[in-house]
Image (tube, rainbow, N blue to C red):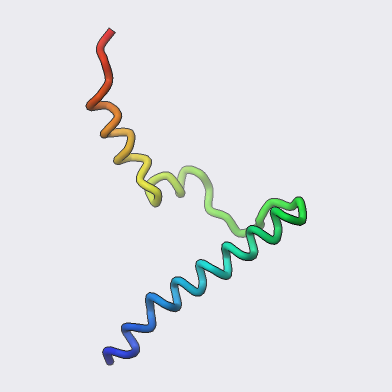
Amino acid sequence: MGYKIAGYPLTVLSSAVHAIREALHDIREGKMPERMIGFTELQPVVGFPVYDETLKRFEIEK
């Protein structure tokens, strides 16, 4: 069981590398990649909401 579970991260990583290569190939060919998530869906994945909340703490009142 430990071996099977240990393989999942490599499966995800391999899938990500494949998708990155496809996207870079499309960009090099002057095309937009077909398989992309939208910007709204991307924001929480990369941490925009946390960044926005942190930024609010440093705002100066006018």
